[in-house]
Structures are given as C-alpha cells and as structure tokens.
Amino acid sequence: MATSTAPGKVYLFGEHAVVYGEPAVPCAVQRRAEVSVKERSSGLRVQAGDLTLSGFAVEYDGAELSRPDVDAPDALVDAALGYLNEALAQARDAANAPRAGFDVVVNSDIPLGAGLGSSAAVTVAAIDAATRSLGIELDRTELAERAYQVESAVQGGQASRADTFCSTMGGAVRVEGEDCQTIDAPDLPFVIGYDGNTGDTGALVADVRNLRNNYAFAADTISAIGDLVRRGERRLTSDAQAELGRLMNFNHGLLSALGVSARSLDAMVWAARNAGASGAKLTGAGGGGCVVALDETDETLTALNYTPECETAFRAALDTVGVQENS
Ligand code: MEV
Image (cartoon, rainbow, N blue to C red; front, top):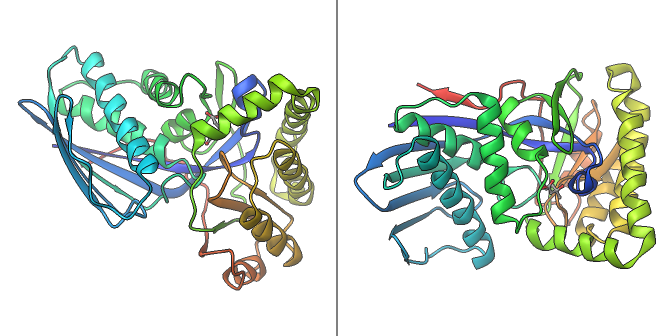
C-alpha cells in the first residue's frame, strides 16, 4: 500500500485567463487530499470519504461501473471518478503496467468542485501513490505533466497547468502556458468563504471560450486579467497587501464580466470587503464554491460566518509542501 497527499490551492490571480496563455498565480493552502493505493490483480475499487459527500464506494471492472449512492450531483461524482480513472491510467502508463488493478481510498478535506483545487490534489496524490504502489517513483516535473494530462482529458482538452503544477510543487507558483515556476511569496492571511455549492469546471471553461469567440470585450477582459497578474506578481510581499487586495478586487470584477461569478460568491466578496478585507475574489472556475479574501484580523472571518450565503468560512495558510509520500 502506498499513500500520498497533495495540497489544494487558491488563485491569488489569473484563473480562466491562464487557459489562454496569460499568467496566473495560484497558492497552495493547508487543506490536503490523501490517496492510498494498493495494487490488485484487476479492476478498480474506490472508496472515498469527506469529499463533502457523505462518502462513497464504487467497484468496477472494465466498463462495469455501479453508480455510488451519494447525496451529490451525478456530474460531480462522475467528474471525481473521471479524474481518478485518468490518474490511474497515467500511473499504469508510467509504470508500463497496462493491466494493473487498484484498490483506492481517497480522503480529502478540500471541498469538491469548489475552486480549491480538489481534483488537482486528488489527481496528483493518486498518480504519486499508484506509481509508488507499482514500484516506481516519478520526479515532480513528470508527475505535474501527467497530472496536467489528466485534467486536460477530463476537461475536454481545456485546462491549464496551473492547478496541477501548484498541487505538485506546493507554495506559490507562476504559470504562463508551458512555463511553470515556483515563486517566493509571503504567508498571506487568506480567509476562505464557501457557499456549499459547486461549479462545473469543464462547462465554465467552455462558456468563457464561447464568450471569447463571440465578443471582443471578452478577449480584452482576458488580456486585462493578464496585465493585472503581471502587476500583482511584482508586489508579492507582505507590505504590499493593500495593493494585492486592490488587484484581487479588480480580478473579481473582470471574472464577473466573463460570467463566472454567482450571486452567492458576490455576496461573500462584498461581506469580506465591508468587513475590511484588503481584497476579495472568487477562486477557481467559479459558478459557486469559494471566495478568497486577505485579512489578518478576525473581521472577515466573523462577517462571512454571519453571511447567509456562506456555509462555512475558515483560514488557510500557504502550504509550502507539495505532493508528499505518507509513510
Ligand atoms: C480551475 O481551477 C482553473 C481554471 O483556470 C481552469 C484551468 O486553469 O484549467 C478555470
């Protein structure tokens, strides 16, 4: 049995625009997914708990997949299984073991489909654990690349390397097309608000692509996000928090213009700003899920906890540890 963990992330800046080659700066946060894998002669058995689902187990052999009985939208469960399936296919390919079967247990404290990188964290940890269970150890660059291939396959060819590179490396990263780098960043006072909803990343990315194909303003908005990220990355120091927050606010406005915000996300963003946060924005694909704000005081956390649209709010520190084997 091999067990690996990998962190979730928030986007300080740049989601969606990064799909079109603009830079983005995601930061890994201390909420992790843990995947344990044991080789078995054939087929696949998956048990998952704490994915903000009540926990589910599926067993399937080849094409036979029994639908798990869970209180979650089918699309979400399908997506979660899709990421796992593709991750295990990458592990078989890397280990040259095309017929390997696996027993997989997933435990995660990252809400599923909520903009905190749950799918990337599960994918990265699953490839790492599955390849270890087959007796090989991938270097991080190859692991990140294989995890990106998984996201790209599940999201219909429309994915950036940002989520998977961040989850593999930990800390703050900068991704622009194929250029992926770890960067220095202070431990910013992230406060996260979660509306209890989910967004369908593939569908939201496709919506933005349609908008960009049909409206010049959308293409301009995407390059404006890129300009904002280039400005923000030069100010990644703890004494520039006011400017970083201002840029996060602008970034949220531009994402709203692209149609990926939601009433609940806007309500949480405004609750954070009114409470004195330096800035607040949605994080990840949008449509529902999480916002991230900067505030070292307790005011934003308290305000979010009293906001009807917010199901839960919590602090999340930068996680400098990327994918890691759990012994
Ligand atoms: C989703 O977490 C981030 C997006 O930019 C998609 C991607 O980068 O693949 C919306």
